[in-house]
Image 1 (cartoon, rainbow, N blue to C red):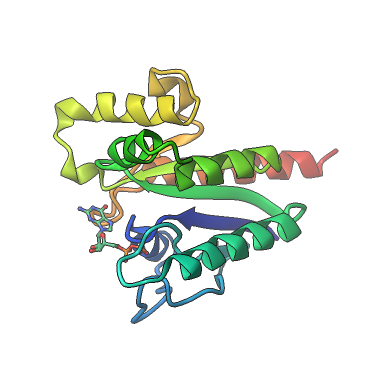
Image 2: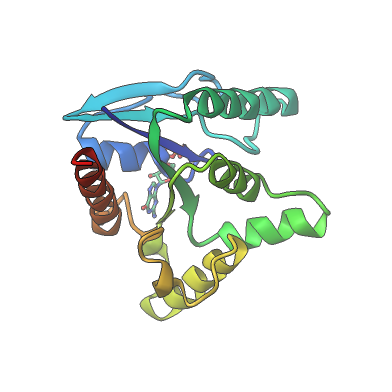
Length: 194
Ligand code: GDP
């Protein structure tokens, strides 16, 4: 069984993406920040785990936001052996701006913290850069370079097409992520031969 966990701030389009990927609805009628528990769905041989959205949510107390983060961290720590891939979903058009805002307050941006945490545990992590449809064609490369740079991947981002997947969940354009997942599944099968 191949477990993929999806993490991301609330409102980045994580549910839309999972729905697009699997045809199944997660978190129907959700209110941001209300669900603490991960939601799991089976999709052929995959176990898809949708983590609650983290970070600032209007109307949700800061303490609750910390609890959400702790729950995610604990779930992933306990599941390290089993989790084969993490997909961190980010909001492409605003990611760099949000990170800069945190950094200017001398705070560690929660996305970067989560990304580093996953990497430190040795979990294979893919960044799904969502809402690409909001960007003009000619600005896409710069935005993606900026995101890569923030995550410690030396631009140009195209050097990292195994780890960065520009997508639009809303428009159903998720091929780059699909390819990465398929590639990882293949790698897995090859491993089984040894
Ligand atoms: P979640 O909180 O991360 O699960 O986000 P949702 O899937 O609920 O989406 C949050 C909002 O972003 C909704 O209004 C979606 O319609 C919108 N959204 C999601 N994906 C996209 C996308 O690819 N492009 C655009 N423009 N909007 C999107």
